[in-house]
Image 1 (cartoon, rainbow, N blue to C red):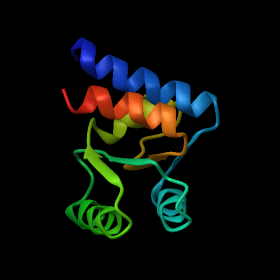
Image 2 (tube, rainbow, N blue to C red):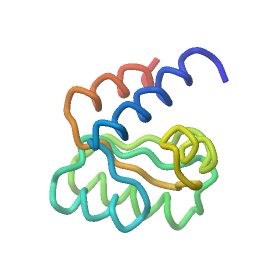
Image 3 (cartoon, rainbow, N blue to C red):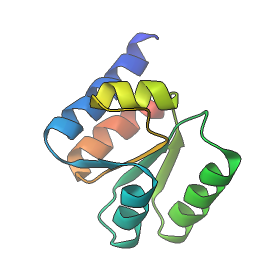
Image 4 (cartoon, one colour):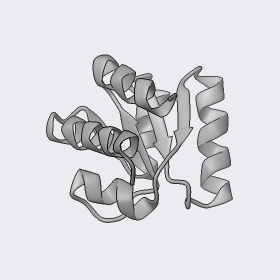
Length: 103
């Protein structure tokens, strides 16, 4: 992992502790549909089906969508089991994460 990755993962951890993040397929989908999600991150090793579902959903709701980290890494930075999907609910935190993801 390089420094950029660390920044993204630490912001995910921060958002988790601030309760400004939901993870797991059901919760992520719910946040998107309720327009609470500001950014969606899907693990690079998630199934093609999962990626396609969230890509389409984010396109429809005009949300930023990124594939980043493995399920293991995403889960680890949240202090949870492996997670394939997550949504950040806070605008400011989402913008910080996007800044690092777009580098």
